Length: 190
Image (cartoon, rainbow, N blue to C red):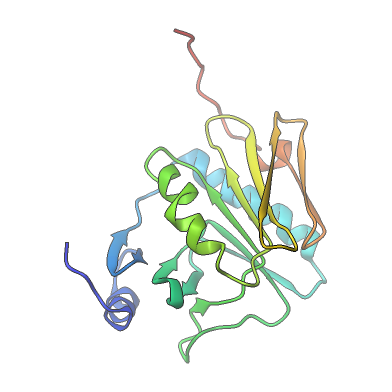
Protein backbone atom coordinates (compact mmCIF):
# COMPACT_ATOMS: atom_id res chain seq x y z
CA UNK A 1 0.00 0.00 0.00
CA UNK A 2 1.55 3.34 -1.02
CA UNK A 3 2.16 6.08 1.52
CA UNK A 4 0.78 9.57 1.00
CA UNK A 5 1.70 12.94 2.46
CA UNK A 6 -0.92 14.86 4.42
CA UNK A 7 -1.14 17.38 1.57
CA UNK A 8 -1.74 14.58 -0.96
CA UNK A 9 -4.42 13.04 1.26
CA UNK A 10 -6.28 16.34 1.72
CA UNK A 11 -6.19 17.05 -2.03
CA UNK A 12 -7.52 13.57 -2.84
CA UNK A 13 -10.08 13.62 -0.02
CA UNK A 14 -11.54 17.01 -0.86
CA UNK A 15 -12.26 15.84 -4.40
CA UNK A 16 -13.36 12.32 -3.54
CA UNK A 17 -16.87 10.96 -3.89
CA UNK A 18 -16.47 8.77 -0.78
CA UNK A 19 -14.80 9.57 2.54
CA UNK A 20 -11.47 8.14 3.64
CA UNK A 21 -9.40 8.58 6.77
CA UNK A 22 -5.65 9.16 6.92
CA UNK A 23 -3.61 6.97 9.25
CA UNK A 24 0.20 7.14 9.31
CA UNK A 25 0.48 7.89 5.59
CA UNK A 26 -2.18 5.42 4.48
CA UNK A 27 -5.57 6.34 3.06
CA UNK A 28 -8.23 4.12 4.63
CA UNK A 29 -11.68 4.10 2.96
CA UNK A 30 -14.70 4.56 5.24
CA UNK A 31 -17.25 1.80 4.81
CA UNK A 32 -21.00 2.25 4.80
CA UNK A 33 -22.80 2.01 8.12
CA UNK A 34 -25.63 -0.33 9.12
CA UNK A 35 -29.12 0.82 10.04
CA UNK A 36 -28.51 0.39 13.81
CA UNK A 37 -25.27 2.39 13.49
CA UNK A 38 -27.07 5.24 11.72
CA UNK A 39 -29.94 5.25 14.23
CA UNK A 40 -27.51 5.39 17.17
CA UNK A 41 -25.57 8.29 15.61
CA UNK A 42 -28.77 10.19 14.77
CA UNK A 43 -30.25 9.60 18.23
CA UNK A 44 -27.01 10.69 19.95
CA UNK A 45 -26.75 13.86 17.87
CA UNK A 46 -30.42 14.69 18.55
CA UNK A 47 -30.05 14.16 22.31
CA UNK A 48 -26.86 16.20 22.60
CA UNK A 49 -28.14 18.90 20.25
CA UNK A 50 -31.28 19.36 22.34
CA UNK A 51 -29.33 19.56 25.61
CA UNK A 52 -26.76 21.98 24.15
CA UNK A 53 -29.33 24.30 22.58
CA UNK A 54 -28.65 27.90 23.61
CA UNK A 55 -25.12 27.06 24.77
CA UNK A 56 -21.84 27.84 23.02
CA UNK A 57 -21.35 24.24 21.86
CA UNK A 58 -21.78 22.51 18.51
CA UNK A 59 -22.55 18.88 17.67
CA UNK A 60 -21.30 17.40 14.39
CA UNK A 61 -21.96 13.99 12.90
CA UNK A 62 -19.98 11.85 10.47
CA UNK A 63 -18.79 14.58 8.08
CA UNK A 64 -16.64 16.75 10.37
CA UNK A 65 -13.05 15.70 9.85
CA UNK A 66 -10.86 15.86 12.96
CA UNK A 67 -7.29 16.96 12.27
CA UNK A 68 -4.49 15.34 14.26
CA UNK A 69 -1.81 16.35 11.78
CA UNK A 70 0.98 15.90 14.36
CA UNK A 71 -0.23 12.33 14.96
CA UNK A 72 -0.63 11.61 11.23
CA UNK A 73 -4.37 11.06 11.60
CA UNK A 74 -7.35 12.67 9.94
CA UNK A 75 -10.55 10.95 11.03
CA UNK A 76 -14.32 11.25 10.74
CA UNK A 77 -15.73 10.41 14.18
CA UNK A 78 -19.38 9.40 14.32
CA UNK A 79 -20.20 12.32 16.65
CA UNK A 80 -18.06 15.28 17.75
CA UNK A 81 -18.86 18.03 20.25
CA UNK A 82 -16.88 21.26 20.45
CA UNK A 83 -17.56 24.11 22.87
CA UNK A 84 -16.41 27.65 22.33
CA UNK A 85 -14.99 28.72 19.00
CA UNK A 86 -14.19 25.80 16.69
CA UNK A 87 -10.49 25.70 15.77
CA UNK A 88 -10.39 24.90 12.07
CA UNK A 89 -6.96 24.13 10.66
CA UNK A 90 -6.94 25.84 7.28
CA UNK A 91 -8.76 28.22 4.96
CA UNK A 92 -11.12 25.45 3.79
CA UNK A 93 -12.51 25.27 7.37
CA UNK A 94 -13.12 21.53 7.13
CA UNK A 95 -10.59 20.19 9.66
CA UNK A 96 -11.57 20.51 13.33
CA UNK A 97 -8.71 20.66 15.83
CA UNK A 98 -10.41 21.14 19.23
CA UNK A 99 -13.09 18.51 19.93
CA UNK A 100 -14.17 18.10 23.58
CA UNK A 101 -16.17 14.90 23.15
CA UNK A 102 -15.80 12.20 20.50
CA UNK A 103 -18.24 9.32 20.07
CA UNK A 104 -17.61 6.25 17.94
CA UNK A 105 -20.27 3.60 17.28
CA UNK A 106 -18.59 0.21 17.18
CA UNK A 107 -18.96 -2.28 14.37
CA UNK A 108 -17.19 -5.58 13.74
CA UNK A 109 -15.02 -4.01 11.04
CA UNK A 110 -13.98 -0.89 13.03
CA UNK A 111 -13.94 -1.95 16.69
CA UNK A 112 -10.23 -2.78 16.80
CA UNK A 113 -9.34 0.50 15.08
CA UNK A 114 -11.66 2.59 17.32
CA UNK A 115 -10.28 0.99 20.50
CA UNK A 116 -6.69 0.83 19.28
CA UNK A 117 -4.67 3.21 17.15
CA UNK A 118 -7.51 5.71 16.78
CA UNK A 119 -8.01 6.10 20.54
CA UNK A 120 -4.24 6.20 21.11
CA UNK A 121 -4.03 9.13 18.69
CA UNK A 122 -7.24 10.79 19.96
CA UNK A 123 -5.76 10.87 23.47
CA UNK A 124 -3.12 13.29 22.15
CA UNK A 125 -5.80 15.93 21.45
CA UNK A 126 -5.35 18.44 24.25
CA UNK A 127 -8.97 19.64 24.14
CA UNK A 128 -10.48 16.12 24.24
CA UNK A 129 -12.09 15.40 27.61
CA UNK A 130 -14.37 12.43 26.92
CA UNK A 131 -14.45 9.50 24.49
CA UNK A 132 -17.43 7.18 24.14
CA UNK A 133 -17.62 3.80 22.45
CA UNK A 134 -21.20 2.75 21.76
CA UNK A 135 -22.04 -0.88 20.96
CA UNK A 136 -24.66 -1.44 18.30
CA UNK A 137 -25.51 -5.06 19.15
CA UNK A 138 -26.50 -4.46 22.80
CA UNK A 139 -27.29 -1.42 25.00
CA UNK A 140 -23.75 -0.69 26.19
CA UNK A 141 -21.64 2.48 26.27
CA UNK A 142 -18.02 2.64 27.40
CA UNK A 143 -17.12 6.09 28.70
CA UNK A 144 -13.51 7.28 28.93
CA UNK A 145 -12.81 10.50 30.85
CA UNK A 146 -9.49 12.36 30.86
CA UNK A 147 -8.18 12.88 34.40
CA UNK A 148 -6.09 15.82 35.59
CA UNK A 149 -2.88 13.76 35.22
CA UNK A 150 -3.87 12.90 31.60
CA UNK A 151 -4.72 9.30 32.50
CA UNK A 152 -8.09 8.05 31.24
CA UNK A 153 -10.72 6.56 33.53
CA UNK A 154 -13.21 4.12 32.00
CA UNK A 155 -16.72 3.34 33.18
CA UNK A 156 -19.60 1.70 31.41
CA UNK A 157 -23.35 1.93 31.26
CA UNK A 158 -25.28 -1.20 30.37
CA UNK A 159 -29.00 -1.73 29.82
CA UNK A 160 -31.69 0.58 28.52
CA UNK A 161 -32.34 2.08 31.97
CA UNK A 162 -28.71 3.28 32.34
CA UNK A 163 -27.31 6.69 31.49
CA UNK A 164 -23.94 8.39 31.00
CA UNK A 165 -23.12 11.83 32.45
CA UNK A 166 -20.83 13.83 30.20
CA UNK A 167 -19.28 16.18 32.75
CA UNK A 168 -17.24 18.25 30.30
CA UNK A 169 -20.39 19.44 28.51
CA UNK A 170 -22.92 18.86 31.32
CA UNK A 171 -25.13 16.53 29.30
CA UNK A 172 -26.68 13.14 30.02
CA UNK A 173 -27.05 10.39 27.44
CA UNK A 174 -29.82 8.00 28.44
CA UNK A 175 -29.38 4.64 26.74
CA UNK A 176 -33.14 4.35 26.16
CA UNK A 177 -32.82 7.46 23.95
CA UNK A 178 -29.52 6.49 22.29
CA UNK A 179 -31.00 3.13 21.27
CA UNK A 180 -34.47 4.41 20.30
CA UNK A 181 -35.87 2.20 17.47
CA UNK A 182 -32.74 -0.01 17.39
CA UNK A 183 -33.65 -3.69 17.01
CA UNK A 184 -31.20 -6.07 18.67
CA UNK A 185 -30.62 -9.49 17.12
CA UNK A 186 -31.61 -12.49 19.20
CA UNK A 187 -28.59 -13.97 20.90
CA UNK A 188 -28.15 -17.70 20.88
CA UNK A 189 -26.14 -19.37 23.62
CA UNK A 190 -23.70 -22.13 22.66
